[in-house]
Length: 337
Image (cartoon, rainbow, N blue to C red; front, side):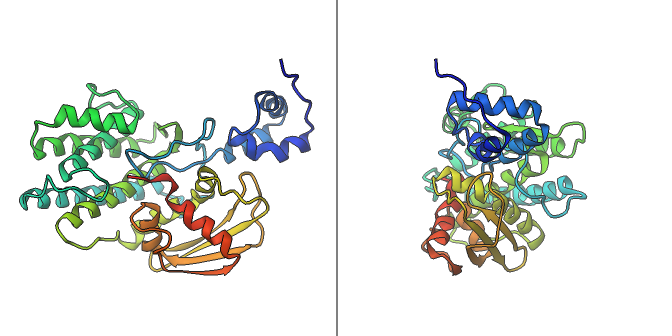
């Protein structure tokens, strides 16, 4: 049996990032936990560092490493006074627009058309029903008890099998019931955290994650009709951009592009944009940026949603171009459908 090493408080401070990412070996992790047990300030910091974003993507989205979970998503979101109602308004709006796009595709006879993600338009609506009902299930408000599956690939397949002989209207009924349940949960002050695919997300982040994916898929349906994409209004886009900015550090870790000692600044221009300073090593403290990457906020959100490639997004780099390439490559790490 490997002996447990003795670690000083300084040693543990240096290992917090690796511990949060579950990158310590078992003996080392146990030694870290001994120190955390008597240092609540370090224990709180370890919880803070175990952040990850969720998940914008869908059927083949990357799972975070074991032990990596989001108790807190980076910095505080803008609008701390009423984040849940603002997030629900975004979620409701994107859901309404998704339903509108789905009905237009059906009216045009395009439900069998293959969308960007490889699903037919009909299957994409089924997938959205699977996703929304999964969040409802995760917060203890199950809508579709016949499908308890939590793996996204398997759940989508199970939903296709369950709903395949139903009309689009019937599928939308299941989807809409799930959205309504999630909105009710997000505005209920008695319940605050969703366990979403191995992560812990607060109510606002959970519904922004769902709204983000819903926007992406509504645009997928619009493309079936030959229509252009429809960006969210600036106040709603700001919520999505903030989630994308706060999750960038986790994305870097997920794709293996951590850069010890380096700090990046992401600047998103246009209505709904903002700026985020991101340590490029988990657990590190942000310093003066080694690189500043500037891009349009809509372009960046489409990149995060994996609808434009890193090489195609217009951007400006001030500083280390290699670090900018890391940011561009990491942005869509959490979304692959």
